[in-house]
Amino acid sequence: MIRDYDAVIAGAGFAGAVSARKLAEAGKKVLILEKRNHIGGNAYDYCDENHVLRHEYGPHIFHTNSEKAVAFLSRFTDWFDYEHRVLGWIEGRLVPIPFNLTSIEMLFEKEKADHLKSVLISAYGMGKKVPILELRKNPDPEINELAEYIFEHVFKYYTMKQWGYTAEEIDPAVTARVPVLVSYDDRYFQDSFQKMPKDGYTAIFEKMLDHPNITVRLNTDAADHITVDTENKKVLADGEPYDGIVIYTGLADHLLKYCLGDLSYRSLEFDVQSHDGDYQPATTVNYPTSAEIHPYTRISEYKKMMFNPPAERTTVAVEYPYVYNRTGEKGNVPYYPVFTEESKGRYQAYTDLLKGISNLYLLGRLAEYRYYNMDAIVERALEFTDEILKH
Image 1 (cartoon, rainbow, N blue to C red):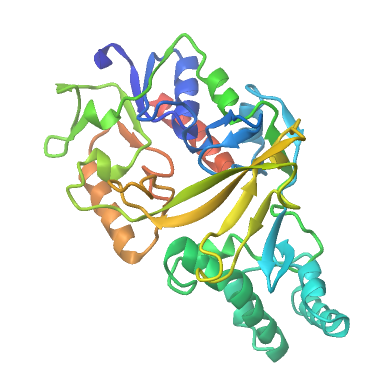
Image 2 (image 1 turned 45 degrees about the vertical axis):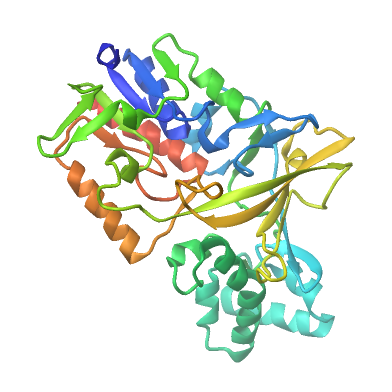
């Protein structure tokens, strides 16, 4: 019975698994309820028929400046060096993304390219990362012209396909995640620690959850067992009051039975294909073109992220964005919160209903209605459980 446990956690992704391990090591008896038939959340991977470590929910690249996250995860994995590189299909050429000085060289004639590089370096300084919306506001006509070119060919259509909104309509933090680089650094990330787990992500979770104080139940929707009495400010476990720790990492609207309507998310679907040899020159190729030209946003080749990739066959995933629909045949996995004023207001209304319930905690990408990189949610969960254990 759930009441036999000191803590119950909804979800076995990073937020839930890290929290469970921390609580278990503090002597708490922990039950994890996982809706899916596997652990690992969206980081779940497995070896497929091509002997490729396939990321079921799209490519997950580990990069961080957090020593705390690295130290914790390194208890459960060895690493190998990996620096992620992305190419973008622009006017029939594959050029580095984020857009950088090499991209300029590849897309413009030498004289014009040299001039544009000089103007950019003079305006911002070598090594600067410039959000595209900031670049478009530059009053210099040459920089503005370049900014409009980059916006048109890198951001405009990709954003519309990915989010269903224009770049101007969504939170500026979204486009700021992929800045223009005034440098020749063609890595997608510039963090100090860029590595991948040697045996994949699922192996990390298996080791992390291998503790005598942790019990995992798969194929179990926590919302079927954990309910909230918002009027009396209590948590119920299978209909009975529960005073233990409850960490919920799932959808906030699902926990509360969608009483205020659905929160907005974007979803993804993957056309997974097998091919002989290698498929493309980089792990990921973006297609920032209109949906009429390429209805997908990117293609990822998983073996290029492996420690010992097979030579004979390869597995690629063609990525299509969808509006999230929890009852649909496609697009039924929530990936990215859509940060409109309406959706942020609805989420706030849901959290207002939960105020005053002292043993219920919302943690993670879905529960907190925000985007987390893997390292960020690991660090957040570590600090979060430290605070819980103080009480």
